[in-house]
Image 1 (spheres, rainbow, N blue to C red):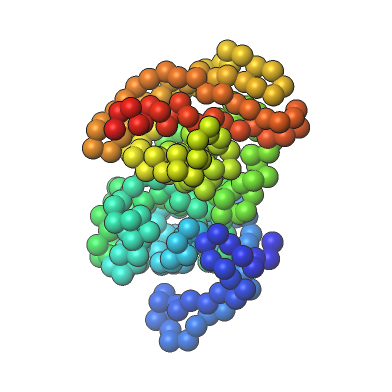
Image 2: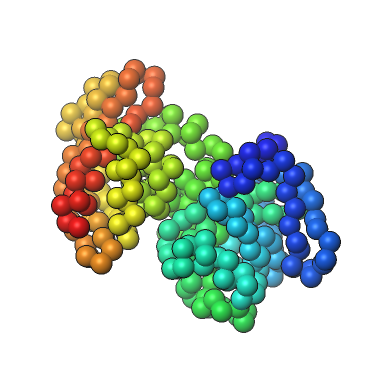
Length: 276
């Protein structure tokens, strides 16, 4: 897919200084977005290879080196300057939040997802205490050997396929995806699937107070073609407050049997506001 506009950057032609080779000239790419499977990416960016990461939301970029990883790429920022840019992307605080990214490799833009929490070992003197993970299409986690839905949603965002994806979801799947977007503090993605009886834009700002979110979705207690009510057990970690555990019902609505489901987020917003 040829790219001209991205949420990340408005690009007709993209160029960046290749700090990787310390060149003074700029490199030009024709920006084919290519949704590659992990088995393919694993060959494109072998261990010890270096490549550029572009954050979708901020358009900021930094360079990394792949150090390890079998089901996904374990990488480290290449220099202290790269670490600084990465931390800026995360507003100055390391976080497990997933973010949609593109990597530049083999003259392609490959959709991916990263988190921003240093962990494990690190071998580069870059001011980054460990490594972080980048997931691609069909990547798996270390422990489960399964794909991580939080990363999967961000990969779809980076590939421009999120809107298409949510159209085909069942009510339960749509609720799960909404909670994933809230967990990752991605208000733009949440907005595509959320409803509110109040001002949605203003209400979504409340998710900035969420540090972490866990949930268990139960079977619907009411369901028809246009409306479904689903109980969910939530454990919400609020900044400077702590954890709150509650069971509440979410109402799912759609306008016709062939339209996509939307989630009324008012129960979650009310819970947060009552405990702030």
